[in-house]
Image 1 (tube, one colour):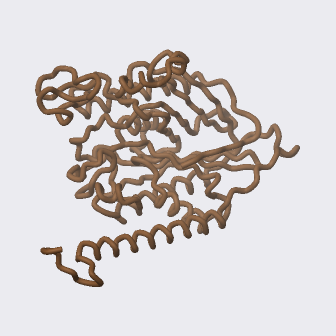
Image 2 (cartoon, rainbow, N blue to C red):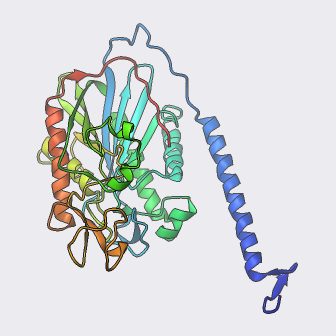
Image 3 (cartoon, rainbow, N blue to C red):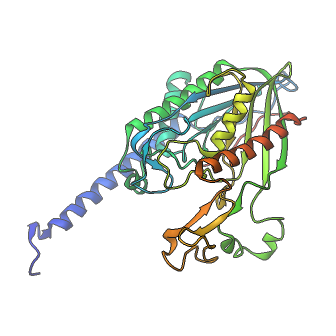
Length: 385
């Protein structure tokens, strides 16, 4: 065709470049699949064993640990809003990994909640590899549960998927290394702190800290399904209370369905957001005199079924008029979707983070104090990613 210059084998430069990229992407995909198959073979699940007479009725071994996993606080894109221009320029709060180990004498599980947008497959593989070097087959793919708090204000660049790499401007080792090191260190601390203890469970509801950000979409669910629930979001707060055999608290693990997006897309500060602030409040109360991130008591506020659940409880409004956005399309008459912004209860995003975080902390504290239902019996676990 006129105007197209053939550079090799009748192919244009563009066609040749795309062909090379396709071959490279195929090679990378095959390599990753081979790595995952090999890893699964090496660290596959061990069979679940029934309780033995020696372990039945005995207390669990429990351990908690916390470690800093803050990445680069400057010139690194933040993970969550897919905005390449949203780069870090300081620290609002530091980021932490919190680990909780439970062992019934036959099975062991470690649950890790980290102040990160989400757990990537690459991050998981590197954490498991580091744990295998230290502990052999003790901590494996089947008994290491990794969860991100879903803050949208942590450093990006720790994914292996192309789409995420585009918004984070590539893979960033300086983001990955603190995450791996912090997560592994939190497990190390929990492992060293293992002791006989008890676990108690409690649950309640928190009504003033979340709303459904897409109520019109929710109405598309079958009516008989919607009739099963009182509201269009899950308001339940679940708390696990960890104590030693003397009844002294050593940790708390809580789940509540809400996005960690009180810090909005204009934010340029590394932040653990509302759930991180809840952890800060609980840990400061239980570790009097300790600096943030220090002290033996560990409080984890983990992500739950937060899909369409927003902490911005004043709802979406048009930034130029102050009027509510269009209910169906979340847009404004002038400015479209770009000027439709959701607002939290505070005067700004920092105040909203404080208010929502305090609400979550207050409810969890109440449930922790009144938890009397003891968790007993054989330990089982299941997770997927």
